[in-house]
Length: 210
Image (cartoon, rainbow, N blue to C red; front, top):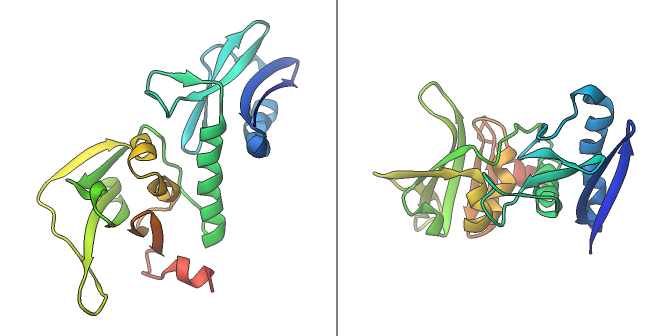
């Protein structure tokens, strides 16, 4: 059930909506408003970056609404005060990091992702996060398995780009791994995450599920 909450912080009322099961995930955002952001800096349009999502304050009466990009519409231009989807994405990303025992690296919803053309329609894909002089960010490619079950990367001649938030509709499971550090590789079969390889080529998913 989606509930509307109003919290008074430093004498200012902040209002947002969220599914009650995700309410606790809003605490870091509220704590940031309480402890990290000076009261005199709070204003209409003030932005708060928090992992995948950048939240925005919108003046409402004598207080502010806390809004997030509307991932069900055009998040570059449309906001919503229902934070359910933004908090759900945050929950899944944090859960994966804790499951793997790694410290993540933030990715923004508007960041560019590169993929081999047609890769998102394929069953078997892998994605790697680069931080090289020539290429930075996530790149998605496809692979096939040989007769022995070994994964063989496909060669791609053409690539296309899109923004990270587009994965929410195109391949939602891929959004979970976007917070992984540089040089990590995530391997999928359909919507199932099959492996997470670190920069030493260790499969952290396998090691931490034992």
